[in-house]
Amino acid sequence: MRFTEELRREADPIFEAIRNHPFVRGIAEAFLSPAQITHYVQQDYLYLSTYAKVYSLGLAKCRTREEMRDFHERIGFILNAEVHPHLTLCRFANVSYEALQQGASMAPTAHHYASHMLVCAQAGTLGDVLATVLPCHWTYVDLARNIVHRDEPTKDHPLYEWIEFYANDDMLFGLTALCRWIDEYAERTSDEDRASMQEAFLVSCHMERRFFEMAYTLENW
Ligand SMILES: Cc1ncc(C[n+]2csc(CCO)c2C)c(N)n1
Image (cartoon, rainbow, N blue to C red; front, side):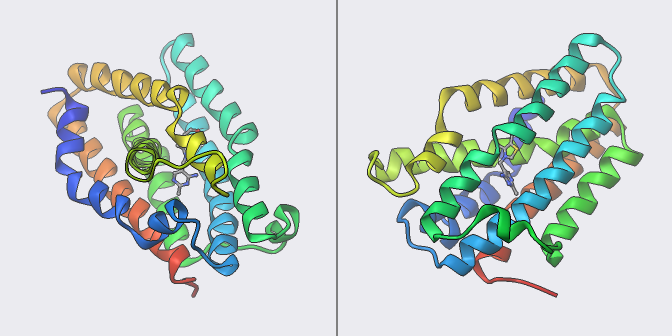
């Protein structure tokens, strides 16, 4: 079995819990309060800044120009394209994207998740970086494609663009490429490195579920 298949199998209960989380079902049914959406977008804006920094620390660990180019493209995508799903949510909640960014600081779960990724990126191997960022990509592709399958949202769904952003084939293509990279890396590395990657991956999966919980319950300090 491929390394990423093993990771996915172990994390299956967490993926299932994310698919059925009330925040995710709230997106599927367009039934979330403006406060919940505002909290999510505020925290996600801060999270994505950390995520881009984690990629850039990964870039510094690359051996080839091809790998560096991959990280570079992914950083560009986060800084430019990831704005769109936030704008879809802000439109639905009738809040200003610029206004909600002012003075926002990380809630406990966002802080925990950001710290986890930064530790992996600063103290870990290239494998740790790849493993800690993978759940972010994988859980969203999974939950969005699950909504498409289960709820069959149409273009008049107020959050259609959000769902489509993560469910589309380009997003799946980026995920598949990342999995292939990780599988090739895992084949060449030590058992110790693979065990560390597994832990980095699982903690990030847990944090993805908790991030939705944080938004749903308006968690703060
Ligand atoms: C907490 C949190 N986790 C995952 C994503 C989704 N996401 C962020 S970057 C990326 C890879 C493609 O750029 C994906 C799928 C999010 N927005 N917030």
